[in-house]
Length: 235
Length: 235
Image (tube, rainbow over all chains, first blue to last red; front, side, top):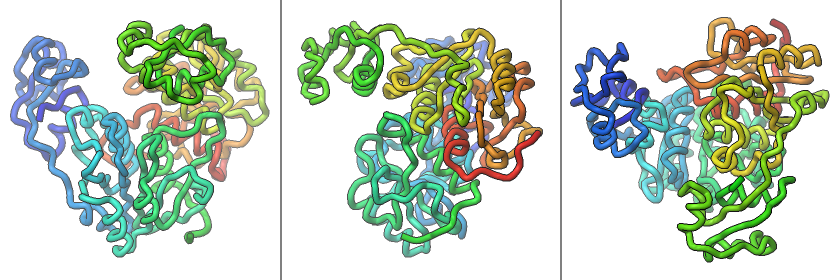
């Protein structure tokens, strides 16, 4: 896989994937952290051809295929917080969610296999390389996996701006937590929503009908991982 | 200004700007809310030409120039929360911040005039049309405006992942609040940072060095506007 962009290549070098080769423009090659990789110096046009994108910042690398984690392993820690994505198809959103999950200290991200973005070079770029340090798992059927997560003592919260949802800062998010996020517009699928222990909602005080899914992920993951938490834990 | 995309055009119609004319593809024109605008039906190529972007979803509109608000007016409410942006140049980030500010219930967004994105059609698109319902002000010098905001009894918080910053969930964010956000990589300028009453930091638990500025804005604006708040308010 050809990973491109400054942060994506730097984090690929720092992370577990084997990096076979690095290409850089003369200018980009001046970055000190690139020196040890002995990059091939090529014109920007050649990097654009290799990357298949103009968004390369003068750097790309040939990196081993992305290794997905096992979903049950991701949830193993007794206080693990996992973001589960229901048919999030936009690579920008998947990348942005992975970046905030890595920064907030989530144990990982679980994505369904069908109608969902996977970890492509565009996702690596949108995540600023965070995918290299984050456990990402793919599961065949997300609703089924949520059921097994509940059997493993996880509390499953679904983000949904619906009347039956509780305010997002109400639950006590201690213990193993799965936060389920759906695609914009479509929201959570009915089987996935039914598999949640509780639905939580972010207040929308303006006239716009929804937050971007990565903005909602940011608010909710920081609330779950870093805020004092509220009072009740129950449906 | 030619605004393009489904949500941007819809919110422009719902908002205060005069809409002179709407163009839509045959398919996009089936949206019920478009019927009252009597759109001109044209091929997608013509919409792409008018919009100057392929990201038009079959709809564009000729809309009056964006009217900026007065920065002091934006901060007038006794519990107003305002996001102030220091040289945020990426239209995607400006749009995403405007969207989350509108959803969270912020009083508005203040941006410096120099080296900063302004409200362009790309920003309208990235904000999902939120700019139509949000007060956005431009000021000549952001540090000077922050000084005047403090004279108007606002408490000015700067987001900065530096050792002297306090954890973001510590301050009592009651009253008039200005939240200052800097561009990724560059952070807050020294004059702007010096103009803040207090710096606040989001914990970074992973190996990535920073959150995207719009993700930081989402977490902080929801914390300020919706969380119970912490204990101390002081530098």
